[in-house]
Length: 475
Image (cartoon, rainbow, N blue to C red):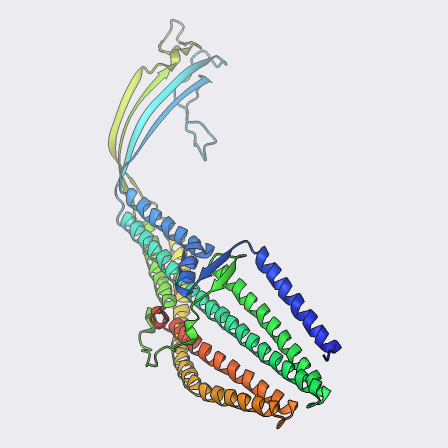
């Protein structure tokens, strides 16, 4: 039996790869079997960015309910107990930012001292913004537009992520199919090695044929190994996009290569329905409502107020014979002894806010203009993508109609060349060239089919309608 160093190296490399690959598969924690629809559902449920958008949408909904709750009157209760001195002076004071206590009371006729007393206060206040001249309605409308924007941002994020998942799935599927193609090519080269070794042993062929066959078989093995690494890369990408990062995927739905999507004309009208453009429109509407709310900032507010309160003090109500008030430091001052109520209305207006509001409106108008130009840019890009995707799909569909002819011719040429070589009518170099032609034809066919599905996905992305793709996938 003829043996060569090259063939020994080939066997060693082959078995080392097989053992390492099996070891890697055994170390994998979990194998997840998915088809395309399952991958899309896992992505919807697991991907963190989509969860983030859902949380933002729910938060915007709570903001809207908070704006609705602002219509109700506000009621508050306060109770306090203080141990303090009773020195007072006449005159005004300004409490600013909570740094000065509110003071009231008369001046002591016999001078000042540091004798303290307990005082107490309990009150309840109901404040109802009866008339805000449209401010509350504007707040509610603004909150509703923000909720709509958050919902639209989620829809856009979901659509774009579905496109990414489907594209990664097609790439992983194509890589897996290419790996199997390379494996078949490896088996063919092994068959050629077997034939050349038999011919060399019997003296029908020169020994160089065997060396060339082993070299080609080794090259086929290396290509198969490279295709395995490429398939693993796309598998890792897909596992990340569906929220199963680190897990090994088992991809099925190989029927993508058994049929093609229908050839029909896609409607390229109504680009404004694209999720990207709908999101920009929602942001424009939000900006408009924000400007309306800012304009109303100059309007007054009419509050209806009701209050009931009681006060207690350790200082006597009446002065003693010396004209001064008796002060007690006991806890008797905590008991409420005077009660009052108040009902009325108060009008609050800040006309000088006009200057601030004018500047805020100018800034918001510039932001609105920026959103308008962003929308115009997105509209032009979407229109161009629609046209480009139509051309790309038509070209890829026409291309896939031609590749089967090339594949059949290459398959027949390989079969004939192999038969002629085995009968001694052809040399190894011509057989090697025909084998290369066959593998290229298989690869071209594989790529052309995958390009049809990916161009259909590009069409769905440009149109903004994922159903364009889903309606065509095999069940």
